[in-house]
Image (cartoon, rainbow, N blue to C red; front, top):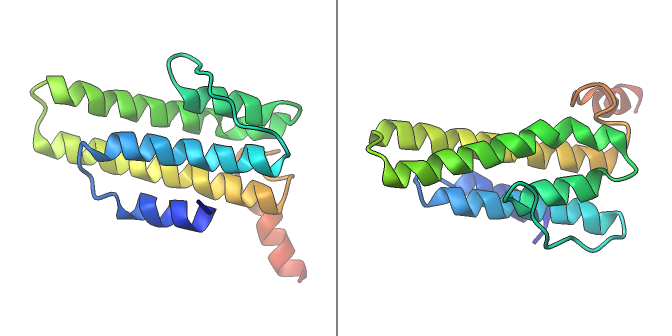
Length: 140
């Protein structure tokens, strides 16, 4: 699936508990795209119980600036866990919708970072600001 297709699927998630697994899988696909673009084969290992975190570790190998999205990946895992706990707990429907929407926003943030990183490898050298991309627009 292309990054544009992944983005459309993220946007289609509408804040339901069932979206948690879908958003986690889409986030993994984003990192798979990054790893494939770098000429590697995505791992099937897990890190701290999540393949997403293992994919991030693989994607950051030999490229420290990619660590700018490490916390984003951890936050996706956190929101996934919140959604899984909500299945067992008596959380309100409002809390579930809020958690699912936040997970979708963070997944989209990961997608935007990775797609920007594919355009400019300097992205992430200072936080995850899109400054290198905006500079290209000004000078073009």
